[in-house]
Length: 196
Image (cartoon, rainbow, N blue to C red; front, side):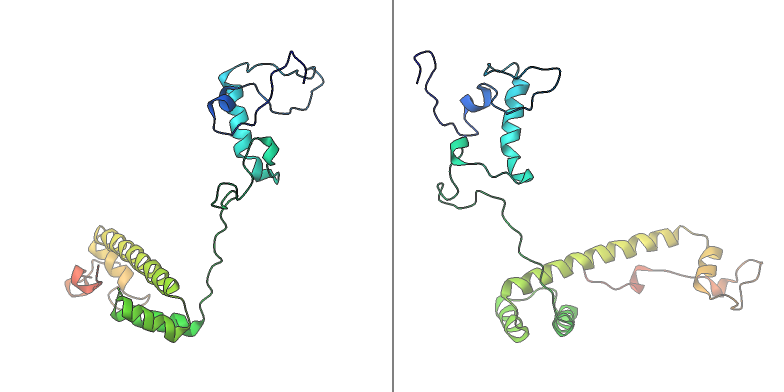
């Protein structure tokens, strides 16, 4: 070490010194710019650029080395240095879906003992059954909201337009004249029975 330079200490990517310290981003020299020497930060933007480059290094396939100021994977104890991989999507068989749907028609929520029995019978994990029921309830809720929106838009139509939508082409009562009162379409909430 020369007497004019300060000893380098490893820094973490979130330390104040690392964020506000000199820009250490290796840059390719352009034709118009001479290569940079190790200068101090020119602006807070430089420090932000350094921080973001360290954060996103893993996205371009570069794995940070411990000598670059980061702890080695596993050194922090959790082993979650990289991005956590999602579990692959479960492909349910047609028989499993049929049984799950059959059960869902009668029961939107399962007790733990019922869930355990169903999972064992279908050869699934409890978590898969729980997730399937959660997703199915969410789908039911979306479908009900969509039906209610459709019903509201139908109610906004004139009775003649409702009648034209309700009767098939060529059916009696579709003449150019006004619709007869007995052929009007009457919609009510009672016609759509869905448990919320």
